[in-house]
Figure 1 (cartoon, rainbow, N blue to C red):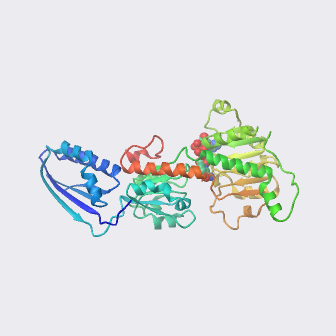
Figure 2 (figure 1 turned 135 degrees about the horizontal axis):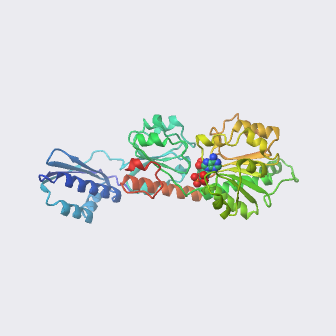
Figure 3 (figure 1 turned 90 degrees about the horizontal axis):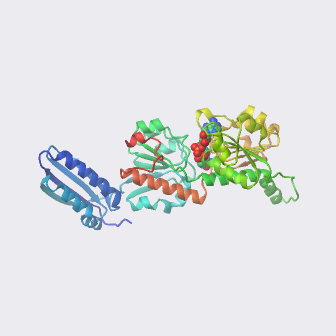
Length: 426
Ligand code: NAD
């Protein structure tokens, strides 16, 4: 990709005919945008208006070969042709830069798992960006982000918080591309205020989360982790486990993930109840599921699975009163977000035997504190917020983030609905 040769800097000083400046600047900005988007060898293309009649084009190329490639581009010939009548004088200077520019800018990838799958972000490197990875093995907290983000023009974001405080350290940041579909840690209004676009990877990991949800449900029903421990400890024999076939699952939230879970449960001949106040009953029935009230779902389900987003209105949606309504033989599963379940009430319900067990991928505090009682309970199956991180989903999400960053920074429109704050783009 990059050679060891020094960068080449080109300064083109242009005299612009009277009355042509505005039109020239428009055409030059468009040319800069196309050049930066399409030429990996062009690291900087800046258009600087010196005064009413003079403009300097400041261009940095990775090396001489990149400059020559630019000179041969039809886009350059077209730009010269379009502006020929406006330019009355031209002076061209070439400099060799002592140091080397890192590229078009820095992209900070905060996702630990991607530091082992760097090839997924190669298109950014090929386009001239420097990519910096999170090598700590865990997601950044606010302090970690504040330390790592200065200088980054884009982040490929995990679950670290983006708010007024962290954004104050991110002066160069123009886009946060979330490797996922939840944005409860992103203060979208603060991003808008800071001029930072927030792009999501909608549609890339719901099947993975649904697979993981089924894995937790099946592990609980079949007591897989109990059997595993039993055999490893030298034991043998049945623990009299449950089943999926013919049981009832209750889905709280019927969006992309809820629907994908429903399909899988139907494949196991499970009855599927749904509570989602924002989805028409007919849409639920159309997919072979039963729309029910929240209380009915709790009372009738063998598995209660949560798939609503974390918002102030869904905080502790599943709380002490909810556990009291559930059957003592029922399990609760959460692959959505920790705050949807009152974790202290859950621990009490599990200890008291008012429900049978829980399968949890997400927690109120992550990583789950070492002293959490949930760590000690045998009727709980735990995973470390990885439901959406199957190999295929990570590749699809990374591709979407890379595409969003390249497209956005090139000034082109993104696929509809991916940007949460389109007013920044406008
Ligand atoms: P989605 O937006 O497609 O669906 C969410 C559904 O929840 C919507 O249908 C909405 O109407 C419903 N809803 C909102 N408020 C509700 C309420 N009070 N009660 C019941 N339903 C309500 O989102 P999705 O892609 O299905 O994802 C759901 C959640 O899963 C995300 O918000 C995210 O936090 C979480 N998630 C977790 C992981 C993981 O790795 N564990 C990965 C991806 C997504």
